Each structure stands twice: as structure tokens, then as C-alpha cells.
Length: 264
Length: 224
Image (tube, rainbow over all chains, first blue to last red; front, top):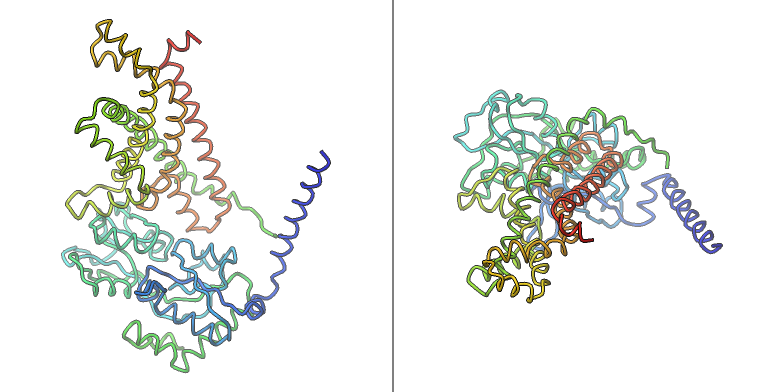
């Protein structure tokens, strides 16, 4: 009986220790320098921002941006592949230091995480085959539109679409794209660069821009309250924009220079 | 750990959760009924003499039991449209669940059938019962009685497995949870509530099975 009580006590003590450890994260930037490793959440199903290369390693604009930040901080880089739906929980539970995952900003997200300044351009739109007669949100009536659950395009489309439009929400971007390519949905809402990449790969259905939902540039996400880290990330993004480093990445992945408004 | 739980934030979504529960319940009921019926037929085919049919059922059972459920689901939803068979997310999900449960219940019920002593079959045939009568009156009832707990568990496993259907946009309970979580990021609260609901559903389902058992086996009840 006594031993049971003792082990219970030990267990409670252990939990207590864990909680203290959790609350002792004063400065995430120092923490990163100390461990010599920057842990970044990147997309793996969202070319050209992040996809899996032929050697099974993640590649893309976001991956290169993460590498640039790690290099500037003088630490190693660890990439964690995430989906649109789970990237914020990964940050909230401190499984990663930063989310660089073509992430757009909105008030709901700003309540739970912090955002850097924009580092990449992004337009959200509705895309479909050339014979689909859709020119505005109102034309979506009676149509089925696929979208990735929890993404900015999901939130915006949910507001814009008429009552009788059927919005099908999928777990991640590759499932959404598969749903379009296999004909399970008539249209999809996604980013312009992603759509261009799919169209480039060539498929029987084709993919034409129907209308723009929102201009939603990408931001780096940090855990709420990591002020030092956020300031540093902002400095590095500005430095990357001025030095032409990010333009170089943009030429590499988007075949275009970054738009001027991003550099303001 | 200075975190304030905000279960109140889930209230605006209670409709969505209720609809999710309803879909999951409907999926579970239809799957259980169809899956067990098909399983009984499959078991009947497998327990008999080696024929083309029994071998075909054998291949089906092995195929389904040795591949992941999510792959079967993706094959039906994303793969079949290529050859012109286009099902909605709900239909594809239901089909995948029925096919899955039917394969498992075939094996479970077959085990029950094989546990019936051969002497009982011979006795029934000697008394002039036809093959069908022997199967439905003499073999099947005690067989089902024997494997009833295993069958109950399998049906519950498949009900819980319906969570995977959220991947192809079926709006069931897990879809509701993921949807809410993607809107307000209250992971702990949302998944806590959903976990409790699944637990209750599983307990209810087990009780339901007990009730069916009570009415299905009146003879056995009287005897024991």
C-alpha cells in the first residue's frame, strides 16, 4: 500500500517537473541558438512552395526561405512536413519554432499565433476546366467546389459562396487536387501559383483561373509572445528583400521577381 | 501551464456537431446491417465445399483484411472515377465501410459455423431437413451466438473507423471536429468533446447489440 502511494507521489512530482519545464521557455531565440537547430514547419503538398523532390527531401520556395533563415542565424535546419490543417497546432504545441508554409494572415489566426511581415506573394482564386461557366462567386450556385479545410481560401470561400454552392472540404492540398483531377469536384479554390503548377504538369481536365478570391501574401508564423524571435525573423526578411536573396528564390521557383508592394 | 479552457466557444458549433453525430450514427447502422448480412452470406459460401464461389470469397476476404482501410477508401473515391465509376463522398465512404465490415464478419461468422459439431449437421440431415433448413435452423443460430461478442467488437471498430471518412470530405463527427478546430484552434476542447461523444456512441452501440442479442436468441435465453 505504501509503495503504491510512493509511486503515485513520484508520478505527481514528475508531472510537476514537466509543467515547470513547459513554462520556463523565456526566450525562444536564445533557445534556438543554444540547441543550434531551427525547427521549421514546411508544406509538402503545395508546389512551388513546398513539395517532395525526387530524392524524397522537401524542396520549394518555403524550404529555401527556411534554409536562408537558419543559415543567417548560424544554426542547423530541421524541416517538419505539415498540412494546412495541422501547421498552427504544431506551432501552438511548440513542436516547431516557425511555420513557413505559404500561410496567409487572418484575424482568427492572429488571436492564437504571431505573424512576421510578408515574405512571398499569393493570390487565392477559384479554378476549373475551361468549359465551366464561372466568373464570380455568385456563379458558384449549384456547383461543387473543392477546398482544403481550414485554409484561408476555405474561410473566404465560405463567406463568399452562395447558399446552394456545395463546398467540399478536404484534409490537405494533395487530396483537394486529387478530388479535382478525378472529377469529384467541378472547381477548386487554391493559390494561383499552385494552380499554375498543376496546369503545367498537364492533365486531361485543364485548370483555368475563374476569379480571384483574395490577395493573401504569405507570412512566417511564430508562437504567440516570442517577440525576440519575431523581431529577428522580420530583420532577416527585410535583409533578404533588400539584398535580392528572396528575389533570387522567387525567380527560381515562381519564374518571376517578387512584386514591388511586397518590398515596401 | 496558464491556460483557460474555453468550452463555451464550441456552443455556436453545436448544430454542426449534432449533424456530425447523426451522420456517424447513420453510417454505423447501415454498415452494421449490410456488413453482417453480407458477412453471413460470405461465411455460408466459405464454410461449404470448395467451389469457385468459396474461393472468390476467400480472395476478397484476404484482400480487404490485408490492406489499410484508408487505401481502400481512396481507391474507391479517387481511383474508380478513372474507369467511369463516380460515387459521391458519402456513397464512397459507406461502400468502403460495408466492404470492410463484410470481409471481417465473414471470417468471424465462419469461425462460428466451423465450431458447430458435425454430428448436429448429420442429425439434422437424417431428420429430413434440407441443406438450407439445416444451415438457417441448426447451424447459424448457435454459430452466431458463439461469435456474438467478437462481431459486436468488430462493428464498433468499423464505426470508430468512420472517422477516416473525414479525409474525403464526408461531414461526419471527426469532420465536424476538424472543421471547428480549423476555425477557432481550440484543439483540446474540440477533441475532448469529440472523444467523449465517440465513447458514448461505442457504449450505446454495445448496449444496442446486447438488446438485439436478447431478442434474437430466445431459445438460448430460456435454456440458460
